[in-house]
Amino acid sequence: MSDERPINLNIIDDEDLVRNSLATVLRVADYHVETFSSGHEYIKALPGLDPDCVIIDVRMPKMNGLDVLDIVKQHKQNTPVIMISGYGDIAMAVKAIQTGAADFIEKPVDPEAVLKVVERACGSVRKKNDTEPNDAEFEAALSNLTNREAEVLTLLVKGDQNKVVARKLGISPRTVEVHRSRIMQRLGAKSFAELVRMTVLGGFKSD
Image 1 (tube, rainbow, N blue to C red):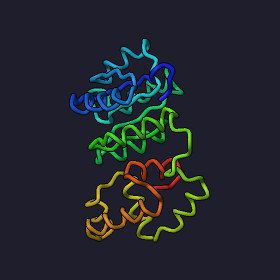
Image 2: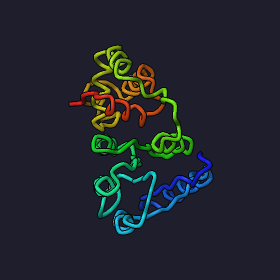
Image 3: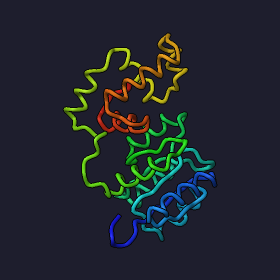
Image 4: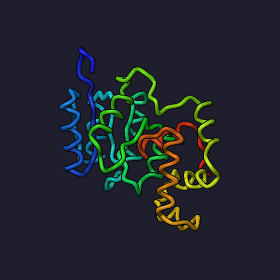
């Protein structure tokens, strides 16, 4: 953290527990945090805010996280946005990254993971993250995947859950878990959220 003014974070989540837990973790780490319980509430307040980073839940009633992301990017183009995503929302998280989100946090929310993602998005971590290989390294790592691992990765990044991947490929959910673990190891991803971010930003084609 800098000795200058605190970094301003905005959190938008309709779940009180998630919103308050995130705020507590980040305030303890000396971030200045403002919270909002809906997309509409946040958009109404946005003209008077000056966030350094915005954290938005993907699934919210009436106005979902992608809608809020679009409006934030129109008004605060250079402000990094982090999406909160449940496993079933991976396809939406992928779309969010493709349309400008800096990263996403996977539920259940892990405090240490939150801090790392926020630090990376805010530029507090100056050194290159080990989970972000350059293009050549990423292409080399992808080339080391077996055909089956590439098939599994393609479906996972599209948002299919393990049981759906298993059904489509004619294998067991346990085998999908094994492939997923090996894929993460080969690509150097420490979490599934990092795996998705790496593949999307690295240009992996899931079509």
